[in-house]
Image (cartoon, rainbow, N blue to C red; front, top):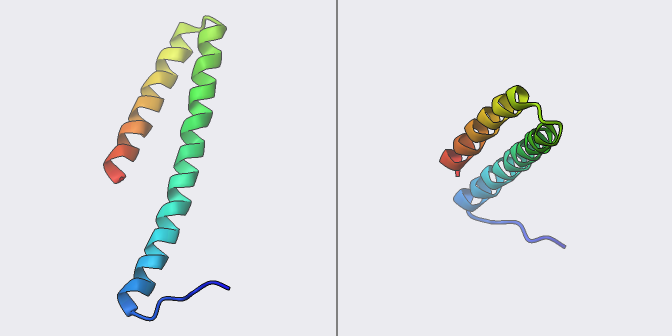
Length: 68
């Protein structure tokens, strides 16, 4: 049985945390996907695609760091 908060601010905080957790999970998954594509491009020696993917990964990681 889960306990529910009684104070209004605590209830709001639970809701905010749920939304942030969902967003973080989504972004984390997206970053992992791009990293895998980047590593695959390196293995295939496709420097143009690897360079493009590196920029994308870097941008997404930095953006996520600002949000946390």
